Each structure stands twice: as C-alpha cells, then as structure tokens.
Image (spheres, rainbow, N blue to C red):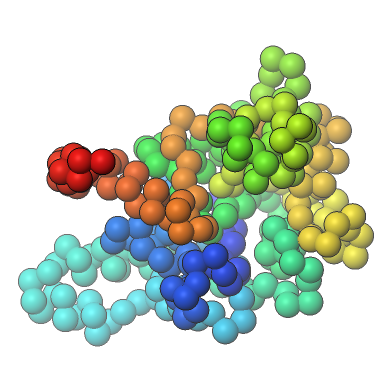
Length: 285
C-alpha cells in the first residue's frame, strides 16, 4: 500500500526568471491554482495522506501556502465567502505535510531531493513526483502509477507518455522489453540518432526503498546526481515496469510550456472552455 509521496520543489526555476526570483516555480499559477497543488491533489486522489515536500534553503513560500490562514479564513467567512474559506481549510487538513530542506552538500541532479529524504522513506513504498509536471484528467497520473505498482511484483513503476521525436532528446527515453510493460532501460536525454522509442519517463515513479541501495552521491558517472542509473540497475534484475498514461502530460518548466499548460488547462475546465474557444476563434490566427 502506497501512502507516502515525495514532491520536489528545490530548484531555482531559472528558465522562468524574473518571475521566480521570489516565487518558487511550483507556486506559479495555472490559471487560479499553483502547479504544486495540482500534484498534491493528484496524490490525494490516489489515496495518499503523507506528503513530503523537499524545498531549498531560503524558500518558505511553499510551507506558507499549505499552512493555515486564520485571518483570511475569518475574513472570507464574515463576508459570506464560505466555499472559498472551506477550500483553504481543506488544503492543509486533507494531508499530513512534512517539509525538509534539500541537502546543500549534494551534487545537482534529480536524485538529490530523493536522497535528502531517504531516512523518511525506508519502511514502505512511496511515489516520487516532479514539482513542475501535471497530468490533466481524472484518475490519471499518480493514480495510474500506484494502480499498476499494486498489481505488480516490482521495485519501481515508471510513469510514461508518448512525445514527439524532438522532445525525446530532452527527456528520459524508456525502452521496453518486447511486448510487455517491463522496462529494459532508461536512456536519459539521448541524441537524435539514439532515439528508438518515443515513450518517455515523466512526472512520477513509484518505488520501494530498494532504490536507495543503488543511490550514492559519491559514486556517480556524470556531473549530475541523477536517479536513472539506479533504476537501470533494477531494470537488469527485471524489477521495473511502466504505465502508459491515458491523461495529458504537461510541464511548465519554461515559458513556452508554461503558456501551453495554461491553455490546455483552460480548455479542460468546463467553466472556461467555451469562452476560451470563442476567444481563440476571434484572434483569426
């Protein structure tokens, strides 16, 4: 049973400067909702109650966002905005939040937030989520990863999506064993001539604590401390499978993809879709 989630929120968001100078990119709004709240809500939808968020030193905004706001709740209630007040209460009461700082002595890379939280993740499976990826749809994302993991005898279940060939070179390409959902390897950011699959690992993965046996920041082959080599070692033992999502994966780590995410979310929302479609038509593009 997966009851814990780890969410990364320790980066500087340099591709979105100057907006991210004082506001973490995970708090940048997708319309009226910060990105990280979509991820937390997806974890709650999957039945997770314990949520660990890894932040960097000097970043208190995310802790504050998930904290109580008595004065604001009182103001909303007194002014008849009961529904808005209840939404705020639900944000901090629906889960048990733990905030930790990423170890500043670790090398840069995707494994550093995970390694920083290792002492909290030694007893049971957990899901590891990126702080700037969302999956649009119901019952998708973390729900899909956990569902397959619970049905499998594996150490890791990867979350994957199909992308255009040019995007594969920026992501982790997943090579499957023939006619199965077992993973042969992950090729991180391959060159275009290495691309043999357009299925990429994005957004999250579910893992047992076994992954920590293969993570050592003092023994890395590249300048970055990334988790893919650890997963590849588990692949060699036949201990990794992957789910292909039915949802729509979006990332907002750079200006273009951030705008695309906002548009796609507006088109997904019933309260906005019609007006947005009419507005786009009016542009006569």
